[in-house]
Length: 298
Image 1 (cartoon, rainbow, N blue to C red):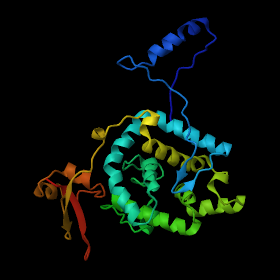
Image 2: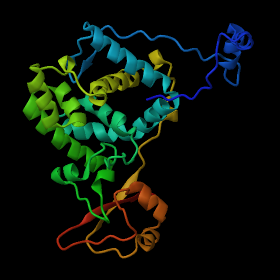
Image 3: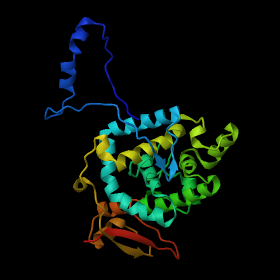
């Protein structure tokens, strides 16, 4: 959501009216090189689909909700630019996991709207690229304890998200509803469908967050697939690349990960960068358990 602070001024005041001229506005909207950065209404695509399912843009409120999210994400310049940069690193790693699990490729955009591909923690305690709550993470097979939290591992979290998505598809048989359920929860979405006696996400009256959720997903998909159309010129050389790593198997307790990283020829900072799932400065390894720790390749 875009928030802008502005000083409230009365345009009926003659002094203020003199200040607000077309020439003044154009001057203030210019960048450092003097080129103007115009805001304009964007043309909404005539057709749109998600995971092979058509979006009914002929329905007025569906069109307007998509239109809104398309504009919001197109004009959140810094945020969207850095999503595109991070996508250069992470989508090539996420895409094969989705494919191997039979999840439509469009779901890669869900990680973008959930976290902007950052290992953030929400106010509600959802963690990582896929914003997974602790109970759900454990149910999906992730290890979550003081020293290890696999929700912070982008690839393991993607595997866990795939488990959820497959389970939701078995319930709903519709990928758009699956996407909406990721925000609302399967039971919550199922109750809404039953109570309102409809079968489509686009026919549901929902809370604001879930009502916007799929449209945010559609908007970021459209912008990522047609960036120039929406004013983004991000050459491939500016996108972040996957970092080459090597893995070491650890099946014994590591009492000090700082010393461990130095012994491996790297720093604790790089160890944490490549293994954000390591949450403390030690790693207790239980019997018959082992971990793969990523290290810089060179």
